[in-house]
Length: 237
Image (cartoon, rainbow, N blue to C red; front, top):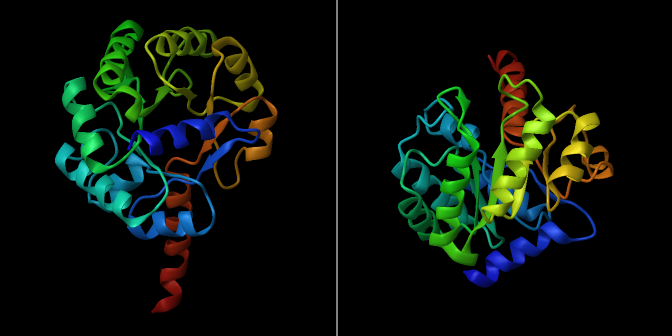
């Protein structure tokens, strides 16, 4: 698995950004891989809804790990899993259980119960995940300063991003950072930066132009398709 993780890690350092339209089940994962994307990322929000839960760490951990494992088995490309804030699991147990699914990456956010986790505490957790997983997990540290009340979201994103990088993460994800502010975060944090794209929102080319090296779509693709289904259903009766 380490070789696959290193392959996925290298994709964060290529000449063009790594683009990840997030999957929510084996079918969507297969479609993404068949379309030529070099890796598959899951969306915790979309996976949760498919499983009958709301977003926000409400999916039982065993259920989420099982869903990730099914996605991993469905494709021949690296899979990175959005695991919210770790579902309350100790770092070592979290890393071990995620690696058992076959995933080679994870997304961990610094929000819990509607607020930001203290940065040093989050950094400690990320460092423990890194120590437990070694090089077998590519860790994407989500920074939520643009979706929580913060006086200066850019400065706080840079502070947290630097701290998480010191903890050993591979990539920092200032989710929903506006394009016009993302460049400041890229410059301030250094290293690979994940940006959020969406159908009808910032495009990969716009995000790449300000320095994003990894671009993911989160729940936006699933939400877009569910809207299309809502529009279709009345025409089927």
